[in-house]
Image (cartoon, rainbow, N blue to C red; front, side, top):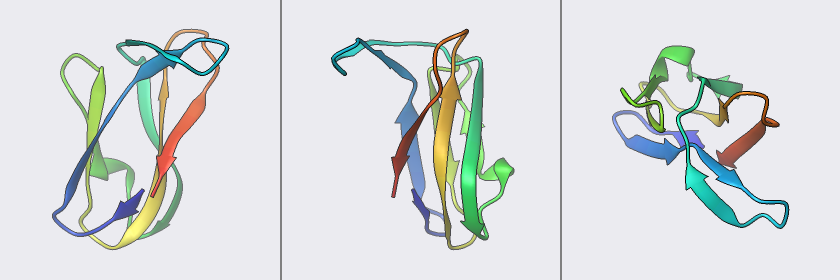
Length: 81
């Protein structure tokens, strides 16, 4: 995901079945920004109160991938824009 100053992007934590089909929206145990570049910092990502989504608001230009983990499920990085 590219960070553009003052532009917010919301992402959801979801589960998929073995074929890659959407199953449900889940509450993540943790949210993280990985592969950060430019001015992206961890504080740019804020989880919602129910942990089912998180919003990234960039302060500086850069990029990162959003990763949500839940229980013992395998980690899968979300979109990179």
